[in-house]
Image (cartoon, rainbow, N blue to C red; front, top):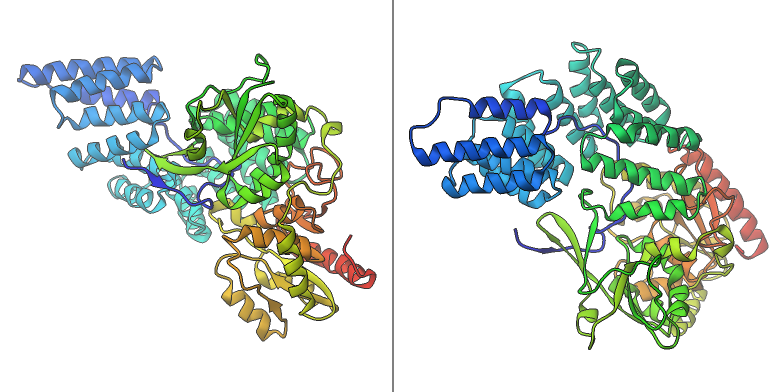
Length: 595
């Protein structure tokens, strides 16, 4: 499979997702079924008999949980007969369970081509495709399976999960409703119905369905994990942590275990358990997470617990999302101090942020990183570090610095931002804003460029911004990148004028940063643009979600101490939040500044 370079929006930070997909390609039942296929009358050809015996050995390895050995045995069978569809299926299972999703996908496709009537292959491939985000492919495969076995609980459930992930919530509910009428005692279906509601932000109703799933099966780990993700935004973080701890031993596969561990790390941070939460956050790099980042650097990873970094050439590699790079980049100065004048810190960030980080940390050398998708995996490499004479002594992911240098709330610096916008550009944009006439100049962000699946619940429709947009004495400035022509036209039709600066708001981040510093105020949800405004020390008001962990159990935002936030009481609480922002904006207009 060839490498595909990813845009920064494709390499975004991820959060724990609802678990609804059912089935396990390596479950005892699945392996027994494969064994029965191998027990059919032995072929007459000696080579084929040998391949059969080799595949039996592969299944024995899978039963023992040794997927690497299972893969080797399956490959041996394929060397004997590369047209053996069953061997391709077994190889695919081993690759999937080893976290080699790209290779697993190819093996499943080969198996399906050779065994077009084996619906189990279609089901396994559909489940993996859904996990990897290939939703249209997954839907076709699941429909193929259901055509042969209508009413199959796992396949119907997984089809609903695909529809949910496509934001076809009505279709997902109907898919589940039809089978629940026949199978009302299925915990799997009740659990997935809960995920459809939680994806839309209706946590209270989702909680009811998760509890029904647990009533049917108290040991159902997926439902307990999902109940945890519903309890946290409803204000019960301790109960959520208890649910996660109870769910983890029942995780069906390494992917589920990693996803649950990711949720647990965020809960620890929500509860302010520092640095335990930051240490647990290392799970974000677990290769069993399809979106986990692999870093390709020709140097060992720095272990702060065993190695003194003083005098070393240390490479800090930025995180998956632009916002995360700004949140976790606050520790770079600590690393520069730690290596001392005899050492050197190199920092790899999103290329559009190089200037901002270089001005902030003049003693470091800042360059860009790049990301490709290779065999279904996100791989990050650092071209400028590869060209350094002598290379680097060690590297570390940027967020991993938190466990080293932020071991308590007191270790978070009290400062108004830390990134440095271009002073000349700030002066230029202040002059441009003055041309707009009197009034408080307010920059606006209202959505993310990545709105797949459950991420949509973190953003409101543009119509709900009307109370803010119509604030007397405020001049609105669009900082929103992407195609927002319809939103701006709707505002214009309603008599609201929003000025859009003549720059590329997605790519010209030097100008966006300078403009954010020049504005009287920037308002938006917790996305890259709002983080950028806070990171450069601008007056920033952030709309935060009920499950935002960045508070670290405080009543402030330790990463940006000067940030003012408006926390939504629930995912549906947009009207109340906008009303509070409007009141605060009226006060800021009256005072002539936003603080």
